[in-house]
Length: 517
Ligand code: ADP
Image (cartoon, rainbow, N blue to C red; front, side, top):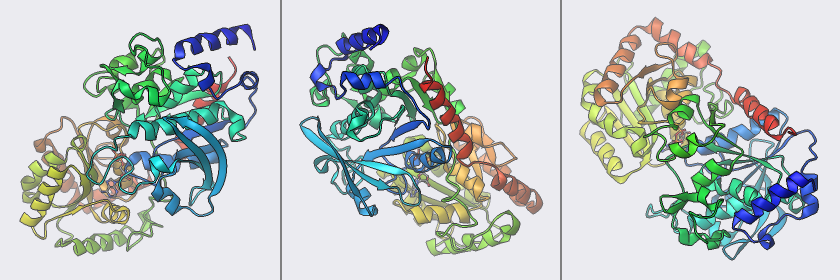
């Protein structure tokens, strides 16, 4: 052990709040940390990954980016919980190493499988007491967060850190541990607390609003000494207004923080979009890197999509009309003369669906129709259902989560509305572009970075119902001029939005971080 490393190691351990016995790493392994050989090994840890389990864009990203990283020559493994639905979705699961006790009195083992439709290896953290539950992965059937979410995602974070630091556990030691969102925010903390020289850690924020906040009473169960949350140097990085935050841990302890678009990376440095974490971000000398998401072009491709009744591409855009006609099954009186606006969204305040409802009378007055698929806030669900009942033939609302219907709406609508109050990246506007269903978006965050007004969609400043109506009116004017509409559709569909370019940026970042100093 070099003197320098030894000092850092001892200092980190002294400050970690963890007793040496709790560290899974032994001294000889720390010596190996300096040895790096190509290809770069990355452990990508995340709470959801399509097609195994998905509640939103995080699942899409974690399904597609690792495949692109594999294509870019990275030796990647994805680690996520062995939820009941994940085990149901997989065949050929192999038993992996036993991790023994991990935290809170819970032990776990790893299971190994290949993510369907890819060559990516998944490591599933198997702890039935925490993950063998039906219902949503984050919430009970009643819509409440699982009361032991700190343990469920503390387990994921700590299992990832253990495997990453003590490579002999799984016979594979990553150069980089890449954690995502609050669920895995503690992973960089554990790595730092154990004083490990490797792996280096990357933390990607997909949405700053979800912060993983818990009372400080959860600290012992997470294996973190609770002796004065605000006094200990390391745990101070977990403290957020008297509580602890998994998100803050990732923001403070990761070697590099990224987010999913350059505009959002700028916006989170200040209120209100920083959601109270803006000071934490400004305190990082290296800031936050914004890398815009891509889309999985194998899953979201109108020429090959098996969810949609009529496949098409830029050369036979006429075939798109059959997808619109098929939406009459939702009770819509479909007509080529009436532009159909689609919305597929989680129903949460962020997404601005309340403003769509406010704008609805004026949108109908302009001749538009509306189809919405979404689930979430009960009051919004009820208002959407009522709007559909009040305007039969012109408004359809489907409440629930339906992957196939999401594809059919994105293929069948003419326009796709994304009036988010803030948007870290947003994927549905990219899907809309790929399907020639032109997005109409609020110019914020990733929406500002991915939609160019009148070139591959429509965008507007200052979110309000009136501005939504004005932007849709502009879009309708172009819709009525078939030549111009087709031109913009083709430009949008031809746009390169695949993952390979972004994967290269991540690969470069990994290489830079893991290069010997
Ligand atoms: P977020 O991650 O904030 O939900 P994104 O636009 O990044 O927003 O990603 C949303 C993803 O979730 C898209 O793949 C979208 O199609 C999908 N989605 C959202 N709501 C539903 C739903 N009710 N049914 C099916 N898919 C949905």
